[in-house]
Structures are given as structure tokens and as C-alpha cells.
Image (cartoon, rainbow, N blue to C red; front, side):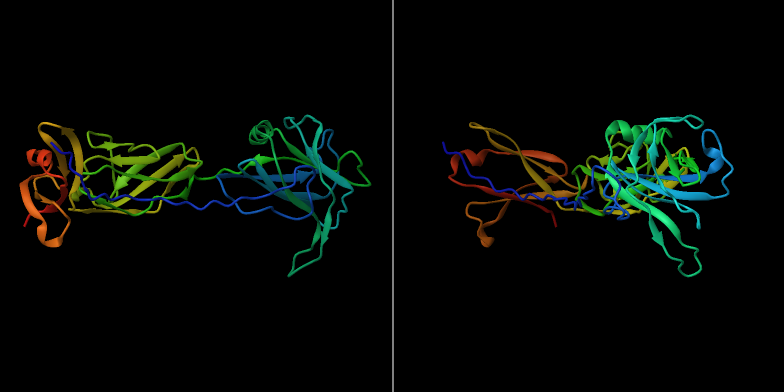
Amino acid sequence: MKTPSILLGLFGMLLATNAQFVAAPNTHFPNSGPVGPSTTCHTDFTVTLRGTNEVPPNSSGYTGLGWFMLDGLLLNFDVGPDAPMIPAGGGIYGPAAEGSNGPMIFEFAGFYFEPPYEGTPGGYDVGGGLWLSVEQAEQLKQGLWYVNITSASYPDGELRGQIRPVPALPYVFSGPTDIEASAGTITCLSLQACGAQGYQWQKDGVNLTNQARITGATSANLCLTDVQPWDAGLYRVTLTNTNGSTNSPTALLSVTSNATLRVAGFNPTSGITLSVTGVRGLNYTVQASADLAVSNWGPVVTNAAPFTWTDSVSTNVPARFYRAVLAP
């Protein structure tokens, strides 16, 4: 008795993703503007600076604005008062709720002057980026940080504002992508979303529900088992959160009628057992060859998919190769 060699046609996919890395200083804010591109889900924040926000409030006639973007644990920012105020210093303070004072967390390294440009008045500005700890990031998200800017007239603080998150819709960071699947296989579509609290997959604009062959209809990953030609179509996800909903890009699922041939088992007495999956109800032929020569492939069994078959001849030959094709 001899154990034969086996050749099966295998089809697979390799998903490659590109990642970019950013670097940021970890001491003080430099006057260098935003640091690096967004590489993860990010949260946007704004701040409005007024004298009346100081504790205690003052009568300054100036105001100011700023933006912050938390990209993972990387905080990028740009903030400044209106012209012609000349700031003496400032920084980010907290944790402290609105109406209370807290210690300085980060000190601005210095303001730079932006000259008037295309109708803008210009003024002093400070920007940069730095890494936060997990605890600091949570304090920021909870609205417990504020900006305080000092001046010669108000050395303890002329303008102040609480840093607040910007209400935003969920958005897609990556995916879903087009897929070509062989009938009878397991196929999954997925995406990475930011700010999503709910997911709803759709096929050709119709909501999907979890059932025998469908799982993950309300998650970031949708999987179809025993995929069939009627599963082909356009798939997308509706993302929701407390601010509203957004639809993802569509992904095309194409289904081919190619058979998938696998070894289901081997018994030294009875031989090799093969499983064939494909389009349910269509006939597929398993062919065998002793040497892979084009002229030596011959049919050994034909049946409707899915089916299994045991080759008793395989126990008495030195080599045996198999393939499955759609029957004519």
C-alpha cells in the first residue's frame, strides 16, 4: 500500500495595508504647526477665548479661537487671540470644569506673529503637537482642559476658553473593498470606522439581517458562508452615532462558479476523501492525473455541489493529482 501525493488548486487573498507613523515632541509645544498626517481615528475640538470666561472674569475686549485634533494620543493644535492683542504667554490647564481653575498642564513655548494676508488682520498664534498619556486624552475628551492666555495687562490671564469636542458624524477610515469569491466559500467584507456607535450592512440598498448564512450584519465585519451567485451585488454600511448617520463607500462582491476542492480526510484502507463546493445544484467533475501532463487528466466522478467523494484507487498508486471543474 502506498500513500499518494495530492495536488489541489488553492485560491487566497493577501490584504495589505499601508501605515504611516508620525513623530511629535514630548515636552513643550513647538511653534511648528500640526505634526504629521492623521493615521488613526481622530477627534476634533475647538476653543473660544473670552475675558468673561476667566475666573474671576475680566472686561477684556479681545477674543480668540483655536482648534485641536486628537489623533490617537497625538494632539495637534493651533490657537491665538484676535489682533492686535499681544500675548505674553499661556498654556493648557486642567483638569478643571468650566468656572474653576486648575494647574498648568502644558506651557506654550511662544507665540509667533502672522502678518495680514489677503484681507485677514493677522495676529499672534501658537501651534504644534505632542503626545498625551491615556489619562490626559480622557480628560481632554471629558471637557476638563482649558486654554488660558496672559498679557501685560492681565498677567494671570486675559482670555480663557474650555476645550470642547466638535459634534461629528461617524466616518469610514478604511474599507470596504471589492471582493471576488468562489461559490461555496466563506467571504467577509469589513471596514474600519471612526465615531460609529451602530452599523447596518446593506446589499443593493436593502438592510441585511443575521441568519443561517449571514453573520455580522450590524457590526464592522460582515461574513457570508457558502456564498452563492445570488449574493453578488453592491454592499455598504450605514454608520450611526448620536450626531446622525453616514453611508460607507460601496464594495462590489463578485461570485464565480469555480469549484473549491479540499481534502476532507484520508484512510489507509479506503483512500482519500475529497470535498467539492461551488454553486449549489451545479454539476462539477473531479479529474485525476498521475503526472500532471495535460493529456493525462481524466474524469473520476461528477456530482452536484456540494459533495464529498472517496477515491479508493488512491491507496494503490504512487502519485495521484486532483482538480475540480464545472461539468459541461
